[in-house]
Length: 200
Image: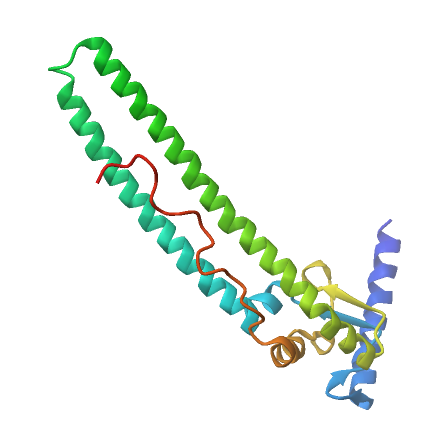
């Protein structure tokens, strides 16, 4: 087993060395000539104009949601305080009905706010998939220029020469090709922030 692992690493090293050597002799349009290319997928998205725009928009929406949650929590705390004060003067049955209504409101608001948080998460995932779909033709062109047969996610590669990493080139090409992309986020992606039943 150990012998096979050493043989595999040796073969991989030979392939990478050959790719690095060929890069010194022949490049086309600034792209290394290699049958294997590597790419930092997370950085491709995070450092692209497209990814930066989405991240900024989602962070803004997340901050709005956090502020809304704090407001709702404050309103509910005040309402609970008033309800507790009423307990002394209300018949037990009437107080219990009010308390049950309050509990139902709290649960409904929790579900609504959780749904909004999930919506933001889903939106983030959808925009990332959209970005990769938009980027695919650009990556395919880089493969063609490099004479490559495959692009590997750099996180999954044990050992590789830096010369076959096309992340920077890919970001530049994608920014030039699609920029920030279309209107990636609707102006109001979350439901109406006025939560039903919250007292001012």
